[in-house]
Length: 102
Picture 1 (spheres, rainbow, N blue to C red):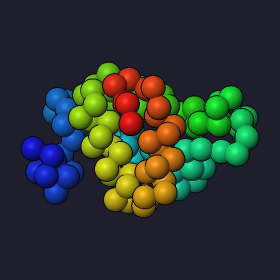
Picture 2 (cartoon, helix red, strand yellow):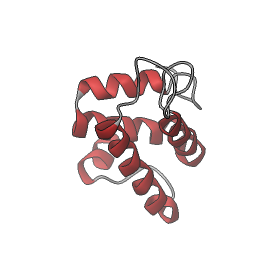
Picture 3 (tube, rainbow, N blue to C red):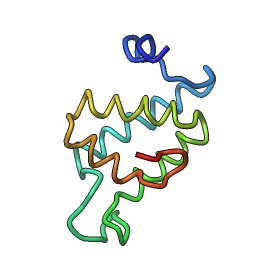
Picture 4 (cartoon, rainbow, N blue to C red):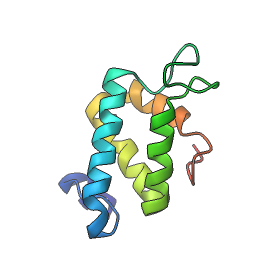
């Protein structure tokens, strides 16, 4: 199912929640482009661990909606659209969020 989901951009979640999921992933991409998911210092949207606060909130909501499968889907979308470095930063920003255990 992952290949199908990735090829056609179909998020692994209930169909009635897809508009919300698409909006959350778009916001995540926007954060990655604008601010990145990590910072060198806390403040201005980054917590004491220098992780983007809103990106963490998005990760929690994605986990509530579709668990690890949906978080992985969003991660792959970030990696495909923004590249490996942004994906690595997201991976660290989501450490201990929901079922994310990378």
